[in-house]
Length: 70
Picture 1: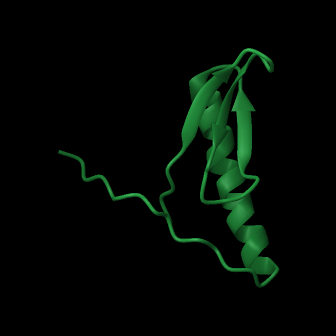
Picture 2 (picture 1 turned 60 degrees about the vertical axis):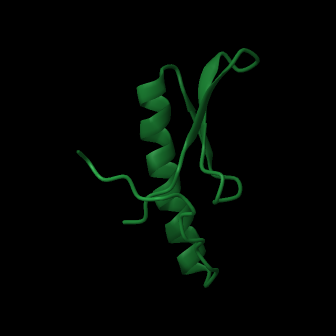
């Protein structure tokens, strides 16, 4: 599975945590806490990739450096 960076922030306007994958245009999700926003963006990422592949569109490679557990 490809590993994308995720931007996570609190939105006063939406009163929710907003998660976004910058490399995948329009791949955004939200949740009432950070954990639920991250769960939602993981699912949204999988659906984004599945949809792009199904439509014959390219799937961008993650731009970040891999992180190795210590």
